[in-house]
Image (cartoon, rainbow, N blue to C red):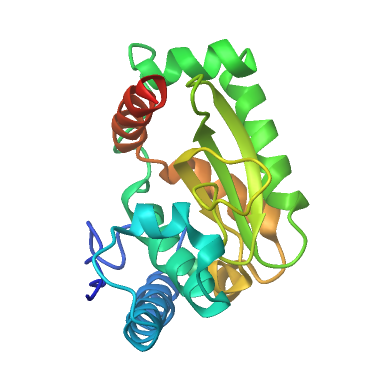
Length: 211
Ligand code: MN
């Protein structure tokens, strides 16, 4: 079986100036392509067949570290591209279910932002910050994971279904922001595609409450 590198849903320069074109090209064509290639090679070598990426991650404890790292890298970046878009194009709208859920869980949007940013800045070294839907309750929570782990994996402390993620590996921001991870996190909030996150929220919640 083979996973394919998904195309970006927008041109490489679409996220300028918050995320520069050169970073996007290297990130997609080198890093994401690399995780995809190495995942496929490891699945082949280890004889893993006929599994969806979600199934693979849910049973990751039964697989090798190579599959864990590259399976996570494949999934995380596939999600990351789709929850961003040109600044201001897909704003958070008070009528969206995700807006109501953010208010219910965090009190205000600003409080959510603060919690998420803290997770992004508090992650030592490389990893990801996440907004997730819990199972089986279906409530929102924020967490972070090291390396290319994610909340779908059955080895992480806070399992759930990710609906928004921020890559805080230095390769995601170093060319433009150097060591300023906080400035990169601030810029990321301007790029969030809330229509896509709202769709993910609704789908994740349907699954959560049916578990
Ligand atoms: Mn990355």
